[in-house]
Image (cartoon, rainbow, N blue to C red):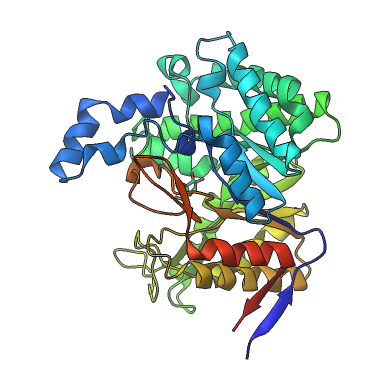
Length: 406
Ligand code: BGC
């Protein structure tokens, strides 16, 4: 029998994007890596179409931001999570670009004009080239550079921002950039990974202090990719221990190092990992998967929320979504996850909002333009935005502050 699940009054409904994935026309460490011979050669060997892996104009949101904000409004969302591109604001070390500051002021003012709450991400993995040239986040100076950039953002843009996300998913950056070499700077170096981790912790804490100094009432947090780890066999002690260790290293350790310097936590939930003691160690049942082969496992969002409740701060699902070009699974995906968010709330978890990833199809990092996460399709030639059927359903959920589940 169908059930209607009501969310608490004031629950924040939103959609998420990031600067590099949608804006277009940016020169940073990612755009540079996309053009390297090594990268191109590898894609050729894999028989991939190179143009799918060059971010280039992305979704042209740099120019189409008014239209994007209209789409957010059209979804009846109360909030929009967007990002700043550091490389755009500080293309040369120490020299901030006034025209770009003005641009972001316009974008943020346009969001406010539409009465949207703004969640602003300051760093979503991409770096200015001058920072990369100095060793990127493995260089301890990066903390100071980041602090200077945060100071600028707080001073110039602070009046428009409701929630600050200092850094997005540090563990994903560390793992892909410094352990598996899938993201720039494409390293496999555990010592540097460790150093980068320390520096990102310090960068967040510095950013937290700077913003609060300027804007005492600011709400400042970060986002973590929170995976639900569980043993493949409940009675297997090795697996039970592995799941606990993974949970600690991936989900908790970074947050604990922040020593309570956050006003909220953003959870991004995509993955469930069923760990086994024998190769390949990850044994998911994969009853349903996304276009990218990622398992769809809504119950995991309940588990990660329950886990983060221990930090005793407001929680927001800042990302949850799937690649589903045909839009066959999206509605069930969203409603399925929301059912578990609702369950966590009804058990006392302080979850205050849900943001679908993503508003529009965009540049999915190392996977290029192929995966389609958007509630809106983006035509790759004209940049026209067209709603997928699920956009209407999500807009009803947001409007009514409730979800209907079977
Ligand atoms: C990232 C997004 C990304 C999404 C889907 C998240 O980990 O923050 O940038 O597009 O996952 O892979």
